[in-house]
Image (tube, rainbow, N blue to C red):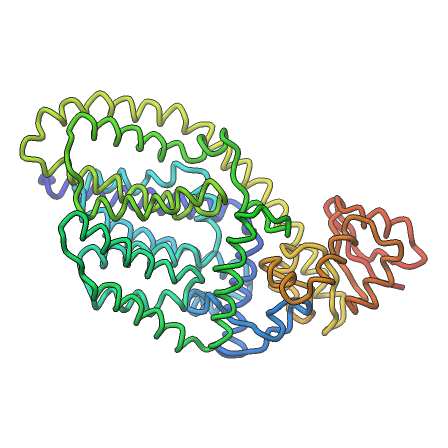
Length: 494
């Protein structure tokens, strides 16, 4: 017979296993990834395997990558390396790598939750972020944002508890993993301002250690100083253009969901926030430093999420740790019996409403995955056809930066226009960037001359929804369609 302690640990283990198996099941529902960036990341890991840590990035001919490449996710790519030795199929190797990163996230998330909650509640809170379709859809992608979330969560915990050694290690590794590394310094200031307001204490060593670790991480990066240029492009210009609403083709990540999608996709966050507000009104308890810091951290990303939906990923992860810390404050109240009794009705209502909203949330996730994976399979087929039928060292024209990651992964012997982010092309090649958009929209009278003379391409790929496709289809004298399916074509200039 299990003791109470043994039963509690069993429930926690069961919760971890259920969450882990759930995301692994979703990941392997399709042989494809549901986003283009995953293809780039496993390809970049393969480039490290073949060429070492520092190599020229020739695969994007009209991008800052061509002459100022910095692998801003190099640690993430290094961690993916062992899985490339398990199979020659890069996509499958990427899925194995995803399993590793998912497991690492669960271990760290549970480690932090257990600092504030008993095992049973830690198991429940582990599952809460995955009730969000926005969080789950992003989590399923093989992207360095998951590793960044791990470093961010650990870094904030070390800041709160003055763990200088751990903080330095996280601050050192963060710049090697994700371009958002400067946030650890931001949160160091946030933590110490709140510590002074709550405890009248200011632990400056936290700020000094965070800055020292970040500077050290930047300096030891194999692509220094180009990594600082990447920070400027991704950390300054991209958010700036996003907030301004500039139409550079950033994609949906830097656009806000509409109200309905926001509420359904993140219902647990808004519902939990209501519970917190009600309990706070009933108990009138002063929050701890930990709760204040987690609230401030989550609040920054919640604010950003209303301008760009990519930030719901960090917002969900941090918010439920804040919620856990709130519960820890309430549980620590010596006179909590009466307030917690009042809490029973909101708790019951919380779970009832959660069940009501879970169905449309899962439907939303299912629709996203089916559409995205189907698109990815199309690009995989096109990329494999290129690899077999197009000569090496060709520049292949394409209209969208989201096209290239698939082809870089599956046909690395050729080169492309731009990948990962429109800012990389817009910053260095603004004239060609505008021409690319005009071509795609069918506004250039002689597209064959522009593609051949300006972009120096003999081959190209097009989505069928592009007006340029109709131009090419109506001009067999200048273009030959080599490959075609329901989504797009591969063509050659005659």
